Image (cartoon, rainbow, N blue to C red; front, top):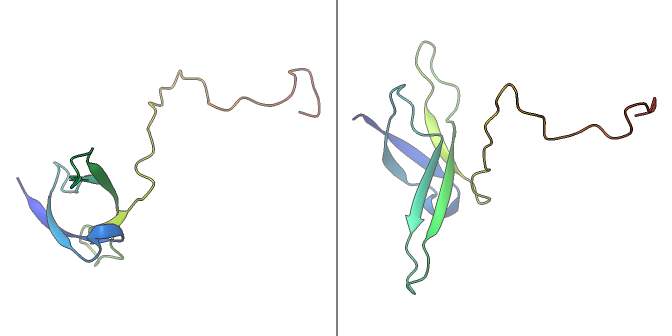
Length: 99
């Protein structure tokens, strides 16, 4: 498998560069989770980093990536099927002209 040295920004890993495995498309994963063991024997703490563009790349070359710290974690994703109902429903009554 191919890997790429990817910089980390923010959080406890700020300024470090780690080799990250690349996927089939040649990009690192969208999120990178780092489990940190608790010294007291409690549950592990998980640091979450999101992939963001490193900056404008050179012409003709693929974009490079870096990881930015996400203290809120990763938002939960919901499958978006074409037949799914939208989350928000319109306010008001169906026959209300003002909405």
